[in-house]
Image 1: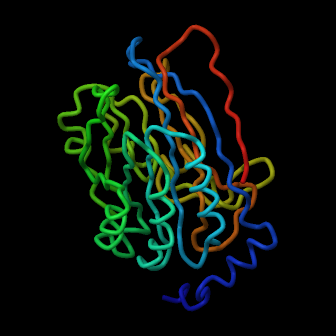
Image 2 (image 1 turned 120 degrees about the vertical axis):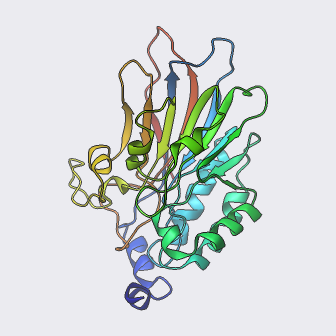
Image 3 (image 1 turned 180 degrees about the vertical axis):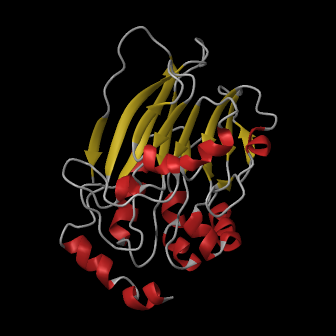
Length: 283
C-alpha cells in the first residue's frame, strides 16, 4: 500500500524511462540443442518472456516493446514466466491485449509469479485466459502435431505457491518443457526428468555493476546461483535451464546494467557442428 501511494500511477517510472534508466528491450535469439530431440522432429521456435511487472514501476513503453518483439519473431509457441503485475492485479489489463496480439499457432502458456499471487491470482488468471493464454499451475498440456510428443509442464511459484512437480509432470511421457517462475522451482524438479526449463524472477539483479555482478538477488539458493543465462544442469544437455532477466521493474523503477530481454529460442536436436551464437536486437 505504501509503494502504491508513493508511485501513484507511475510518475517515477515515467521519469526513469525518459532518462534511460529502464533500459531498452532486447530480443535475444539463440539455438538450443536438446539431447532427447528426435532426429526427424522439426525445430520449434519458442518465444519466452517473464516479469513484466505492469504497474507504476514499469513504463508502458517496455511492455509494448517486449510484445512487439515477440510478435515480430514469428514464433510457434509463446511461454510466459509470471509476475505480470506489480502492486495491484488490475494492472494486468495493461498487458493482456498486447500479449493476445502475439501470434503463436501452437499456443500461449503461462505460470504465475509471487507478485501475481500477492495481488489476486484468480483475477489475473481470468484476464490471461480471456486473452487466449492458458495458465498452467501444476499441470501440463500436450502440443499438437508436428510436436505431439512434447508437453508444456507448468509449476506453481516456489516462494508463494505450492509447487507440485508430480502433478505438473503427470502423464507427460515424451519430451518435457517446464515453465516456472523462479530457478528455485528446481527444488521440486530435482528428482524428475525434463529437457528444458524456462524461468525468470531474478531480474539479473535489476541493479548491477558494469561487470554484470548483481547487487540485489531475490531470496532462494537457486535464484542466487542462476541469476541469468543458459545453464546445463547435469552436463551433456540432459537438463537445461534458461533464466531470463525479465522485462519490468520491481520495488524500484530502475534497471541498471541488467537490460530487459525477451528470448527467441529455436529448439533442435544435438548436432556435431557448433551452435550459432546468441544474437540480440534492441527495441
